[in-house]
Image 1 (tube, rainbow, N blue to C red):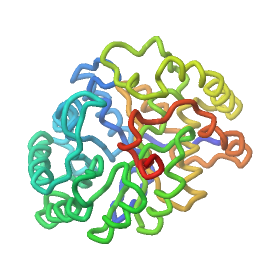
Image 2 (tube, helix red, strand yellow; image 1 turned 45 degrees about the vertical axis):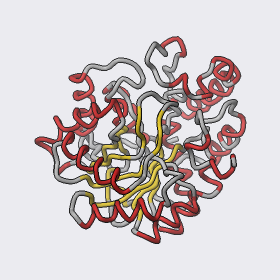
Image 3 (tube, rainbow, N blue to C red; image 1 turned 60 degrees about the vertical axis):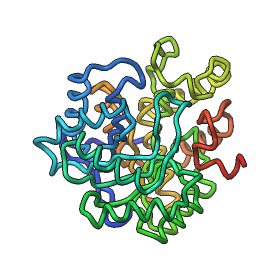
Image 4 (cartoon, helix red, strand yellow; image 1 turned 180 degrees about the vertical axis):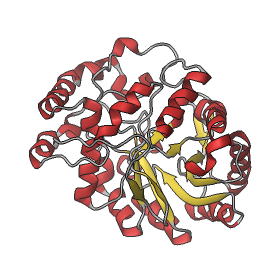
Length: 340
């Protein structure tokens, strides 16, 4: 594998859907809250600033991350650098702890939440506004219709969906162009390849994979012993002790492929996504997250890398061999039609 080296501040650009152009790698700003362990606001801001200085201009957050804390931290950066950033936020998940939340997509909630997000962010618009989860009680046409009104009002530039099914994406796109669909996608989570990606290609929608590093499980330094109180990962089946144990050999095999390729696990995971997206013919912008600036530096050489056919073949069956589903509740994912 040949890694790319991008000068500081320069990353390739990727065109998603509806004319939205962003850096080829994004930053997942859920990490600016305590979801993976405690982080001080100043440390979170320093890591975010480092990512932007390194050339990542696509910043992804949500109203629910840290109860608004992520958006407030981002506001401290964009107060002086708004024109550099393509800013995405989300609405749709209401409530507190992971696994104890509800989904809302009613128009009144859409209008309420954009105003609250803009206030926390300290800006008059976001570049991309996602429905975080599809509300089963509200037709997606109704939700996207309300979102399109925000575009007309100038509060939002582009619309996105998260964890929508292929059918929901098609229905939403019939109401208003959808610039991006965000769903978990990685070398060990490939269910989106069954239908969602085909729908995205059909509608001209770009793909934004979240958890491209499988919540750090694919990274060299992952250690279950470091998962402390307050870390959200144990809510996910793959982080249950029995599944961590069952998957340990597969993780070791993955890291062996990375060593053979002369890269880290994180770099291999990101390069796999760029390569697989190119094979399928879809624009992709992964959004890994971290509290640590050193991790951001580690990601950079993988941007836009194409893996050899041999490496891709070695990784091809990993998703099917994983024990434990990627989500605590399939009804919260694009897999829900399969689970029904």
